[in-house]
Length: 241
Image (cartoon, rainbow, N blue to C red; front, side, top):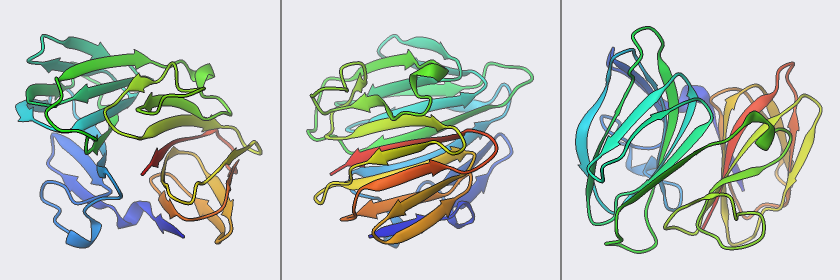
């Protein structure tokens, strides 16, 4: 079964200092029928204005994954971390027993766009931790590059760790190029298109996705993903229980 959620179906939150598109219930968007997809609780497409940001605030028992698309994001937390995250950087913060953090835009001119995804951890009360890595464009060109994974196995050795049985992949797919992804019967797949255009082919049919569209997939066949636009298509694919 595949459900395509279009960009227009997301909830738009525009507070002036930040523009967000929420794929699931979050903040001022309360929809019990769209609260999560498996252990994926939030998938927010955020654009922070210059010199703006989230002031220091607490979290616990959450796995928070961010991907910087453009601009520079500054991260600080009560573990002593202070980082400037450039485009292509992925960060993972395991809130565990409790941590406070802030995410701000230090630029005086340029907005910063970043995805932020929240996952329920597989175990509560873990020790808080933080890590990040800047992936290069060639790392995920025309391939599914594992960027975050809680699954041990071949191909995930260089992925950032997370306390959950998920793997997040990043890909930039050129026009006409194809990728195959084996969909497992007992797993879920969440695919979000950041930019460009792709088509997805599976047992349920063919589906065309544009920027901001997502596909939520369960109990389907292997997926064939094809780049269809003039420009390369960048997307995130998440394998989760």
